[in-house]
Image (cartoon, rainbow, N blue to C red; front, side, top):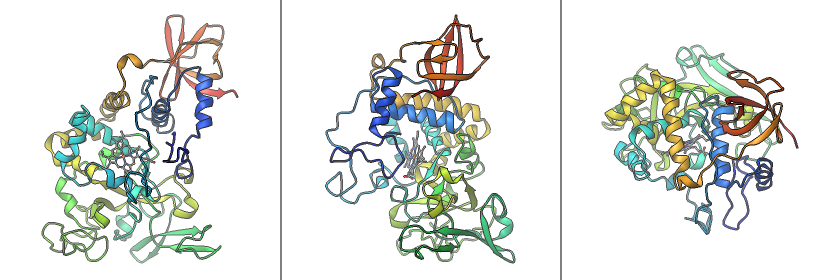
Length: 407
Ligand code: HEM
């Protein structure tokens, strides 16, 4: 929600569509609280989860202090490391479940916390140019019409089919002058949009991320998308081989057993879906007109590592079966993360704002749960839950949706 400053002290807002400093300051003034940018980031997360993703409500507390770094971590020359990409900075990049748990344990987070927190990948995507994973969408994909999931003809995606074989057909209108640009005209490309989604419902904070791991084994990662090179790394093109044995993949990318395949391109180990794809509203992804809004699915080593230990695999199964169990644990675990580094005594809910009807300061509320208080009831705004407000009217509390915020 809030972009940090670069090493010259200027806020970087052009790559992600984040909050400019002035807007964050306006928010602070409106809420009448002293709000740090760390608070704004947490507010952004809890609001996105609830208001955009329809996920669980997480209580908001304020008062985080700014960290002690004198300089922003920058991945530009002169910054942290020249040319380093975000993913190269990850403490562990592979599938190793022990290594993946280690940084979580260091932060006081259990295996159950890690499974729930990784479930945040249910929402959002590997963006265009995805932090070092550029080109993740390329490589072998099952083109059998009958195997595509969802089937060809779903949503607005066009496929180019010949007999039983179909490829996604993107009609890109190139506005810029990228390498594949055909000037000002339009160009057709037979491939998925740039980037990837972690599950079939990236706009919704649900348990589909876990459901897609139901029935999968840790060893399923050994299906290379393409050939295996002399170092034993999986390529994304060529005839698929087994990553461990080097033998041709007995079951092809279209078979029911192979839903994901591995690519180690540039050392950025990941899995790509072989048949699954999803389409989002164009506004949910950057420059859909140029990069497409239908993408194949991906999983990182950190995601698949959850299947690599009996304890975490069982929790994946539990969350796949029971969305509420996932939500309950996520609220707890995200709450821990959001308060790491702060003293409990520093974190507080904002002071109460008295309301006239359902208008409390600059914010007007619409409907409330469990019921909407009558207009003559005296209420005050006492807190927030996700993107909603908590109103106290008499000795009763109501959770109310925001109708309007006045200038
Ligand atoms: C620990 C291992 C993790 C790794 C290696 C990892 C890596 C990544 C990467 C590479 C992306 C794509 C970023 C981009 O497109 O620029 C991503 C997206 C995302 N991650 Fe993670 N992540 C991890 C854990 C987490 C955790 C613990 C959370 C939250 C509690 C989380 C929440 C998200 C979300 C919401 C997105 C989508 C962002 C968007 O749509 O712009 N991730 N992650």
